[in-house]
Amino acid sequence: MNLTVTVLQIVAPVFLLASIGFVWVRVGLEYRIQFVTQLAMTLSLPCLIFVSLMQTRIAPEALTALSLASVMAYAVISLAFVALVRLLRLEGRTYTAPLIFGNTGNLGLPLALFAFGDVGLSYAIIVFAIMALWSYTYGIWLVAGTGSFGRVLREPLVWATVLGALFMWQGWETPDFLTNTLELVGQMAIPMMLITLGVAVARLSAKGMLRAVGLSFVKLLLCVAVAWGVGTVFELDRIAFGVLVLQVATPVAVTSYLIAEKYGADAPSVAGLVVASTLMSVAALPVILAFVL
Image 1 (cartoon, rainbow, N blue to C red):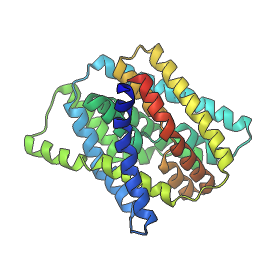
Image 2 (image 1 turned 90 degrees about the horizontal axis):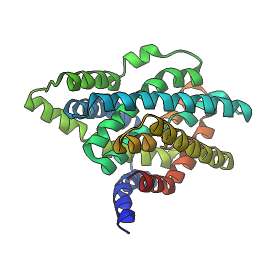
Image 3 (image 1 turned 135 degrees about the horizontal axis):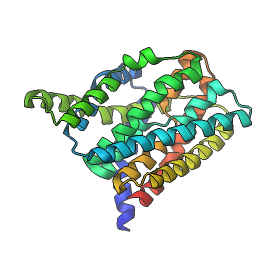
Image 4 (image 1 turned 90 degrees about the vertical axis):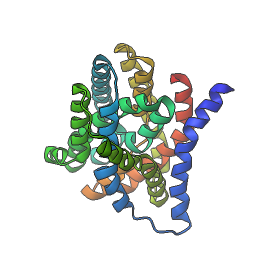
């Protein structure tokens, strides 16, 4: 009973905040998702990443192990889904990237924070940063057919990660007035991203839901299995192991739909994956949490 209550306390705020965004749109209120997303990705989330890394005191060897484990996990998952999409003769531009990349920002960061505290959030940011780098390069190439290294260099979250890691490594601290300001700005990120997730899901029109449900189920099982296996091989500590499994197991990211829309892939099919995998995660993530806590 205690474990059930603990899991519910962790998961409930995530889905309640997302529900606010969902209901907000359904009752006809205005929500400018592009502005809010840009504000979060350009300002609030980079501040959260920088301060979290700067203030963390995780052993360097633990961070190295998690980083290598994350790279290995996404490499295996990428190879597996490239092969699966070809085997099923699905359109690679539409299905490959969404199956590889999960919602490690909007959903993974809050879950890690609520489940494992500030240390868990710091670990989750490492996994998120590695996923983001892979997504903005290989992921964009899968959909658009062109490289995007220049885009990586223009992303504030990338520089926030680099600077945060540098400050953490050197033991540097920004002045208190600046740290307090960055913390305030960063505190907006998680609730804003969760509400935006609910808004985005409410606005999606999904088609081919039977296929979407099947692929989402395969994604969930494969991602959990790969993350669990890689975490075991690298002998991660309890928190790092739990964070890796949670982050890799997150549902299809809403940004996958936006990228598909931008580069001319089958956006409605991607929307179906977002909806199906997100709804599936409502039941799956509490179960995963129960095993990794």
